[in-house]
Image (cartoon, rainbow, N blue to C red; front, side):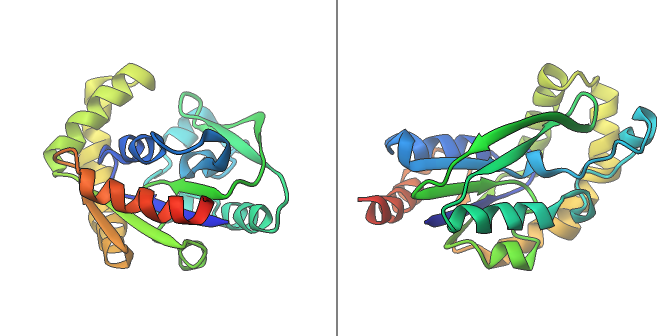
Length: 202
């Protein structure tokens, strides 16, 4: 199994890169795991308390479960991925049944920040985007998809996202094998990644 880690700041275009990579690959051979599914369970907290969690800090991620699940997939076992709700700031009771594939893509802002997880990746990718561009994308997404208002998004960006990006996310660029600038459609980098995958699954 080839495991590819795709990191980058919020709104950097990681999801777009994932879709571009998968575009010409057989769907049955490639699976995706999102770090967002692995936020820690917080049923012991009230909604207001959960709203105050710093979701951009490595502490918010259940890396232990994510690492365990990847190892199980590598051993040919099936897993049940958790499902996370950004509306309630908590895991739901649902899970996603996931079976091993020839290629697993793991994407998320903090996936290169954890050494044990990093060691499981065969290819490490960092998607870089200008901070203004990332803020605009985050604003549009959180208002449209996560029921937030503009002030809430801007406050979170200023007080949490920006400092966390500078402290925990941007430095992980140093661990990347490939850095994809997302200010334009970068066909060369995408083609290189596709070629590596094709070699493994053909």
